[in-house]
Image 1 (cartoon, rainbow, N blue to C red):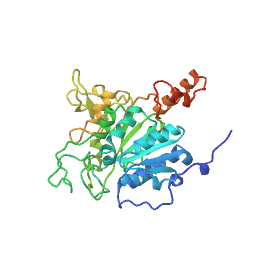
Image 2 (cartoon, one colour):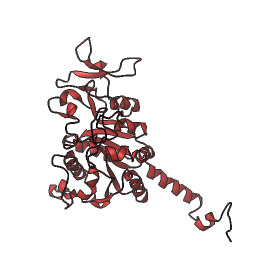
Image 3 (cartoon, rainbow, N blue to C red):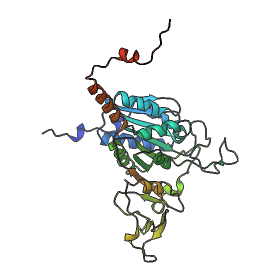
Image 4 (spheres, one colour):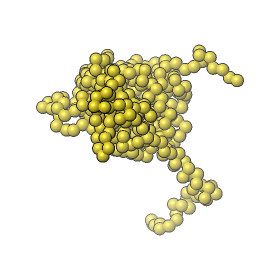
Length: 342
């Protein structure tokens, strides 16, 4: 029997490159890269089979700081590049790193298709509700009223909910985390990695320069216990500093309500139980916003199906078997209706 000594196990530093990490001091990206490197160590990831792919933005510097393979691609197109990488070599472990602007503006169409196709990648969306690299313009996730260089009078647009977008696109795994929650974020990323298919993780990330404190209403220590709902499959949706708040869905209702245990004969039996295989429940949870509701964190939805690259491989194998592996590309090109150019 082979016994692995603790000294032989991977450590987070083994996944850090020799490049100087250059984000603004206090940026939430530092916490996220720490969590990712810890996750890779926990799952004993092979750097030679791991690829990080990014688009454009502050988050897009990620591949430079990882001692793995990586591509720093073009604005919004990281999902397209990642799809090609995974189809060309399904054995590679592919991670996509993108910001809310990169992923949901010019990259929205590409994000839609990698999720609906269910390509086996981990998509990490760093959501700071602003464009950080280009100096603080409003982004697709910025809230109405956001004042920025591009919206000096306040944004008029309704923001995109990344988790709701992912669910609507047909994603089979949708989760949420917070950059500073170092005890919760690595296990969440490990869950995403274990899921075979497209895993979408929205990470609330503080931009200390252009949108500092955007998520303070539910991440600040004084309010976190009362404004965060940490989801566990098969467990009741209970939250609060005193664990006395819960979510209830009354018969014939299509919306959730916050109730207090012990008030009006409300007991734990009245509280909804989280079912991460239920897409409708996930959509309700994704739509909740403080201060009326807690922010749902953890795995909102997980219901696996065969991944895209596996189906492509099986389709090709079936076609080859049908023709005994004797396909002739030249004969194929010359078959059917052809033209002769003189």
